[in-house]
Length: 605
Image (tube, rainbow, N blue to C red):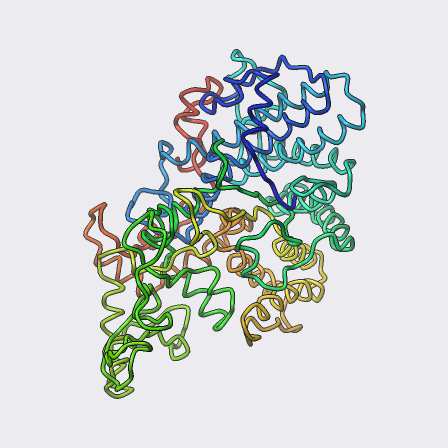
């Protein structure tokens, strides 16, 4: 799926033959009026566009299916201690409910569409093509729900108001339905207009679904092989390929050869179908629109990437650590530049950078000011473990290195990083940032599933099947693109050695997916897809991180204070890890659905 554009015209036109109130009502589940018979292919086409639109809406990928998976991943932080970021999510959490509803609303509309097109007198070829596209969307929606919530209600027929009592189905049954939908969709066209799915989309998704089923130990031996067959077919087709530059995946573009599933947004839409991620994640006064600085990247997550691959060009894309400040939200232009070229004198910096001023005899370009603002960065190369900066090393820095403005300000900067204070002590998620944002709407499209993710999953499949050398080769394709993504080629991330063992490759692939997909909707699933063993390895980076431990000790317990905190106080028990493989079924759904009860919720909730 290379791009989507959604225009309100399509939805208005659809209302001319559908129940308009039901179509646009996102509150009750299973509310679609299914008494529709398409009289023409154009009506069916408009209805299908509506299904695409629901997948891109605010409660789906337009906001919630970015916000919740990224924040609940374990890599994010904010000032709310019981929010998703603390991995202490409540069933009544105000974000979990619309996230659940968003996917079920899309499923409800897709079910109605499939039933309506099947009843129509349209040709079998039209039914197969448009129905296949809708089934891919339904498969994606159910895969998402299983990934976040486990066992979920499964419904594949259009619902009436009497049909809201639906018990949870085992995730194996739901994933079997996902497989069935995608298999059906492999018969649609191999090519498609820009913005539409095709049979290669179905095959690439099938490979991912088989991978997940095998990782969940659902008929593992057969599903590792099934995943290999699907991935091999897509790989050999050369339909998709890696973009030469990593940053181009997250800029302004119409389409991408790396996109398997991508949402395309237009800020001119009045239909409510737009991208609100930059609004939620970008720093206040950093874009031309409105931003709330709600979430930041946890320091251990930044240090994991920097410590694993120093100089990796992806670091500058994954993490927003500097920007030109504005006088406030909704300001078209940043504050005036100091001097003739942009310098630290007119920019904001966050961890692991800080600004300091001293008179070194230089002059700010274009001014007569001799007090230059300089930028320092944590000396990662000097730490015994660059993934875990040492506080004692920093506090003794001037003793071991001699007095200097850098050394003295390093000590002060790090002490400031671990104190309670404002939000500019963490990096932000860079992939979501849109400097040209309009109001709350970003111009940027959204990668949902891309070829690099497929290659890393495919590598894991080959490794599981005993071909570790092929796995290393596939991973090295992704690493090579990363190295070449800067202005000049970087030494890191270096190719993996052919001497790595199977277990070593499994672990490296796990962390490579975390690094490659940081700040993307897939990150929640990728962090948990290998179960508690590797989930624990990731969270141990938080539990042992010295700056996080110190920040946590400075936390006074006020909801309004920002400070690094240990996830679950660093207690990574088996029960805690198992609980956090999934989110809770929202209280709102349990209250509204007679088929569910509080005892039906996921483990630990």
